[in-house]
Image (cartoon, rainbow, N blue to C red; front, side, top):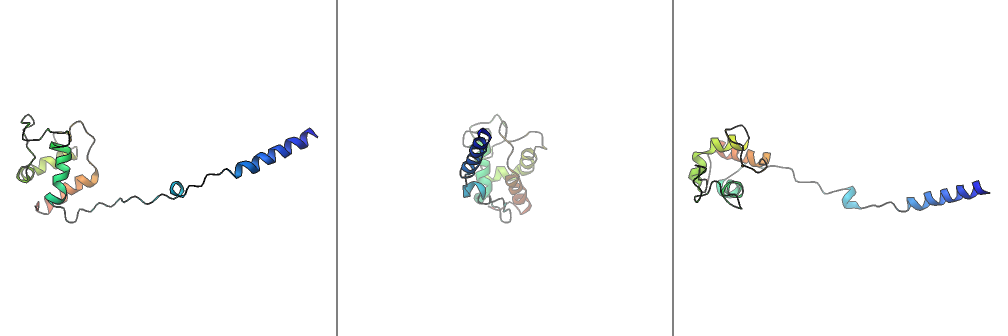
Length: 125
C-alpha cells in the first residue's frame, strides 16, 4: 500500500510540474538584433562628428577639446579630424601609439569602419 501511495504521489507531482512550464515568446524567440553596419555613405556631419564628440571631446570626455591643450590634438572641427585621420584610425584600432579612447572601451568595429570608410571616400562633409 505504501509503495502504491508513493507511486501515485510521484505521478501526481510529475503531472503538476509539467503544467508549470513557463512559455514566454519574447524569451524563446527574441527579435533579431540589427547587426548591419552601413558604411556606404559616411559623412562627417551624419556620423563621424557624433563618434568624435561622444568619445573624444564631449559627453564627459574632453581630452581633445579646445579647452584642453594637454593632449595636443583638438578634434572639435572637421579640419582637425581630417588632418589627423590616419592617427585617429590607428589609435582607435589599437595599433597606433595610443589606444583610444583613453580609459574607455575600444570603439565598436562599426564605428572604426566608419572612420576608415569616411577617409577612403574623401572625407565628405
